[in-house]
Length: 74
Image (cartoon, rainbow, N blue to C red):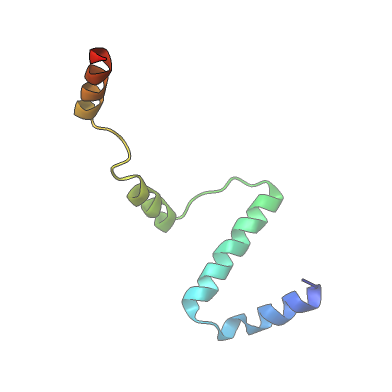
């Protein structure tokens, strides 16, 4: 993509829905942080999504105990 193409697209951004503008801003800030070597800090929404994705992924103490017990039987 050329600089002119980037400018043209960015000129149209204000006509986009607010949610998409926010999404573009977040992505642009992430890219900028990567380029500058800055540390990345997840947003509250990202942390919530991570937590939701991890639900049920960890075994309970009971499940771990049962698994080890089954290993001993074999």
